[in-house]
Image 1: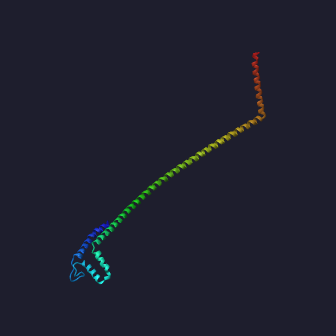
Image 2: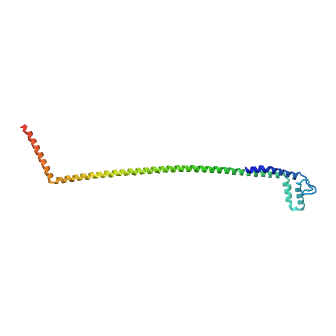
Image 3: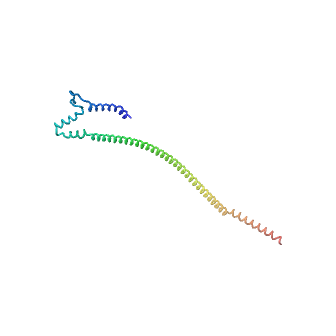
Length: 213
């Protein structure tokens, strides 16, 4: 914007000076008595006068005469020069447009990179949260498994302890009964009860036989 403002500010003055200089060189008749262009119809004729004097005095500079006659006084040369200048201006403008386009694309690329990084950071945070929750779940599952294993082990130990106690009590009971049988008092009691039972059975048999007789 600043370049355009400066161009609009100074170009009219430059164009006015250029027009004034062109009129002075090609149209304005110089003084006949003083000045570097005296005796000439227009100041522009000083160039042809200089070339003519150079051709007369310095024959080895024939190339300068050839350039003046074939280039300076040839309208085709100015036409080609104008085309070259406009082509250079066009290429320069295209380069500027390409640089602007490249700058715009780079800005968009930077913006997209920022958005991509933001998206990746968001996804990374989500994955971290999921991993944290899964770790908590795994730790809770491990704790539950350890508790279940502890209770199962405790029940197995209690069951084995009860079995061992019952087996010990049964063994102690058998031992006590064997000791009682081996004692004399127990044998006498057993024999007395056996004889009493035999007498009762004999009395019952006798009572059953008496009515039949």
